[in-house]
Length: 468
Image 1: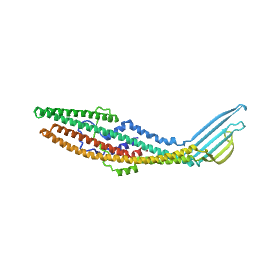
Image 2: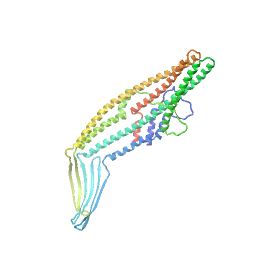
Image 3: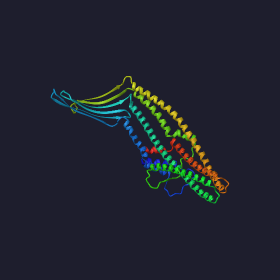
Image 4: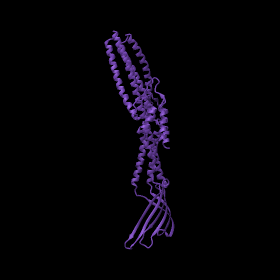
């Protein structure tokens, strides 16, 4: 588990590479910060959800033992005492046998001792060694080998599904952090806007006292401040909600809360055709789909094997005699064949037909999934491109809106524009900043989703370390 945990944390480098944008200034604060990497480390350490996912794989190593025939040595013991009332006598009867099956070649070895009671003057006893080898159904262990392949594929699929669960969990943690960061940045913008306009309010009141500004200007500015204050209250509540989710995930009980830092860009570049080609060749998703088809093929072979008659070659050695010590021994070797052939085999034939139908159904379903995966990834790629373009435009909007606000503030001070023009410029700056944060974080979320869907958020090393 420790090896796995270490490897999982290594994969976090995928999502902590570069800053979202150099234009977002870091807040100088005495509050302790919690980076994305530190958050995921603490969450996976303290949140029981992670351990619940991890536990699922512990059962896989036992499935072969429980689903394949028992290969242990089996001992059967039977002892009874017979009382013959008419004879006024009693005799002991006993049977002891040891047997062992070698599943992968179908061979069964058995050694048995039998002492049978009798009303005759002497009891019979025997010692037998027998080799049984199937040659039709499960010929030389073929049926067991097919079943073993099926179990192996099922185990591999389960391991991949567990890794998928790790990946989904990691993606959910990352998204939670991005939401927290968005709420924090939006709150900073709201608070900054409110404080800036408080200063302007003081200036307008001073201008009114000097008979430069009108009373309506004071009222308009007062409404603007109320609106900004309302916005801060709403943004604070949103931020506190996300903070509670983050602190619960890491089981934080401290008095001083953490604040987020600028998260990293999960990946700097996504190219669809190259990424999709790599996905089809190396991804867990495609491996699972291929394994499901292989499993169906083997199931059909297994069903065909079950249709064969149960036919066994027999080879043995036997001692027969009297009493417990097998006295007056007679030794013999024997060879033979046993056949068990149910007439009709309607149930087994139906199972074979069902196996063929299910295999065909799996292949058709996979074809649909291949097309669906390509479509989903193509649409996701288009969304990534959209956000990249919108981020570029948002940066320009911030630049121009701040320049306009600066000019409008100067123009208003000279009486060249109305207060309405200035308020519009203030709101435009806030909207531009909110837009930049939203699009930047949305791009990160889409990139994480791209890594998750293409099976790159958690690498194969995690799976390999889990198998050690």
